[in-house]
Length: 255
Image (spheres, helix red, strand yellow):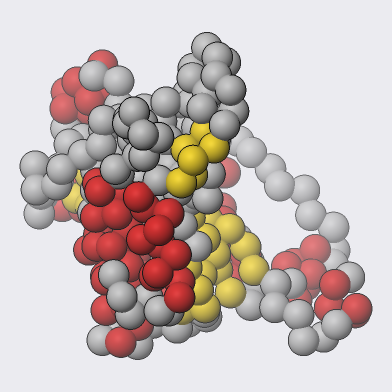
């Protein structure tokens, strides 16, 4: 085991964290948001607490799913708890108990689940931009587990336009990252969240895992390749590259 190699190693896990609000204060909407979040909390509950939570045991029971465990498995789970939680954050969602609204959202191509948040703007792919949601997520995770956190993915997928001189003026990406870093700093300085680090997604353009498209770009470096596989693969630095270079150099003080 890694711990046998070096007992000072810190071992973490990775969580996709789509913060989900209740549409209204209707208790059914609130319950819908709790159930939506439990689908994600289940993984960190096991990793960070070392046991299967009761809500998941009941889910498995209702669906006639049996997890076969050997005699020592429960003790191994307890002994193998993670030292920190790494998670990705891109947007927030909204849960509702209204089946008609959910059906309409699905018909509109919303594959992420939930309905539109009227208080937030969204990307061209319908991902709702919510910087304050990152602060809320950091608070939620830290309050729940009381172990350090690490933001391992945070970024903005967009259609970038390369100008005639080769430049890409992606001010929208700079704005997205700036706002999220500001909220991250509040979570640390004002809320006392223990945060190990922050890494954006991503360094260079690549095919989007979510949609299989090249045109949904996240990188600081533009790659000349389109959805049909055409292009030279030549690379050029976007405006965000130079901005983030300075963010790193100033340790986040200059945004």
